[in-house]
Length: 134
Length: 313
Ligand code: B12
Ligand SMILES: Nc1nc2c(ncn2[C@@H]2O[C@H](COP(=O)(O)OP(=O)(O)OP(=O)(O)O)[C@@H](O)[C@H]2O)c(=O)[nH]1
Ligand SMILES: [Mg+2]
Image 1 (cartoon, each protein chain N blue to C red):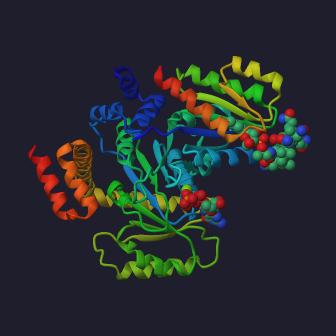
Image 2: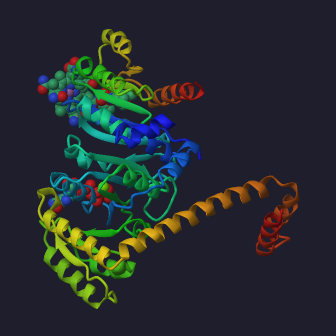
Image 3: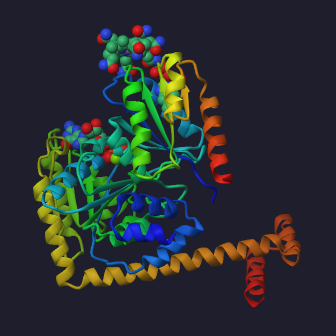
């Protein structure tokens, strides 16, 4: 049996713009992934859910301006628990100038409003491929 | 591996997560883990929740779980959703109805995709039950797919089966048609805030009265999951059923049967894989396969021939 990619998608914190992540979750399913959509959650609960689900990837969505305060927190909590094999990616409305700082703090990639789903899927697949080779 | 099992024994949820991940993907490591944790305690009360799509299975599970946690139980939840036969992907959407559980201690939720297995269960469900059990969960709740038809696999795996329906006409006929009077131990008419609930309850009770079942008469409960109404009655019934199982020795019997079925299932898989591997690659069987494809040999004789050949070799 070939390994399925399992991704936990979530609306970060209290951000209400759920349309994008719901659309994206469906498209990721259509790309052959197993998607667990959590709705709105904060970092502690996101990390717990990802552990329980055995996720390969966490996808954080925010259009609400909380990306700097809550995004890196997710990575931090994962590391605290000794987990380094869950990739964290982000998307939504996130200013260009914040991206380097987010990557610095362990967010693997940031996808803006115009991103094509194909590029998200191929990024995830190729990054996980690298992980497996390691 | 040893380290992982050590933290597992220490009841670290991170370890349970990792262990379940291996078993879910049916990796070599996964089977190794299953071998090592076979000291299955068999203590957990396994509850199957089934019923048509949208009946309120997830909502009810969430409320049930909340009250059970308050009573001091540790809980494992397994939610099964269908894999798309076209893309192989799945949207596992039960967890979103259980958001209120996120902050509770001792609740572990695992969402599974069916990955092509029929019968409303994912292939790895029994393995995951075993691991949650040996991790020390008191109660394990399984929410099945809810494809509308009855999901018989849930019977084999659960101690108590709860069938959730909603008020409405077609229900009664549907129930008889599907032959589900035998499957459930407890019937729930959820969404009792909607009209017709009392009629549904009456219909169900009538049918239970007429059913052949003698050992246990299932009760029919009314709930409004969204309002948390009827949940404590459901818990009482579940406890009553558990006691019934234990006093009639059915509890033990179910565990023995389950162990046996899992052995047969795994043996089946191994034999299947090795037979398939052999006849697909063995040059001696190729000509037979060609003849079958051409229609010059009938599939029945061909299957017998190949089976004999492989078993002897
Ligand atoms: C529709 C909308 C709303 C709707 C939301 C409907 C809903 N429930 O979804 C309503 C009217 C409710 C709303 C409210 C508000 N909004 Co508004 N809203 C928008 C708008 C116009 C479109 C968003 C949208 O649905 N896009 C369509 C979807 C499909 O695209 P998307 O969400 O961007 O998602 C795509 C990608 O970003 C990416 N993606 C998204 N998430 C993720 C996650 C991962 C892991 C990955 C890989 C990719 C990814 O993939 C998706 C598909 O391509 C945007 C403007 C804009 N151009 O973005 C403003 C916008 C997001 N809103 C904005 C604001 C300020 C607000 C309010 C605060 C306004 C107010 N003052 O009251 C409120 C409240 C917000 C809150 N509490 O969180 C600002 C945000 C500014 C910021 N963050 O710096 C924006 C950018 C408008 C602006 N230019 O000022 N909003
Ligand atoms: N009015 C009313 N709505 C309810 C009740 N219980 C659940 N619902 C709603 O019914 C919808 C479906 O509930 P779920 O819990 O997702 O149902 P489900 O059986 O798990 O659905 P699937 O997993 O998709 O098969 C949700 O919108 C719930 O809020 C109830 O008692 N009364
Ligand atoms: Mg559900």
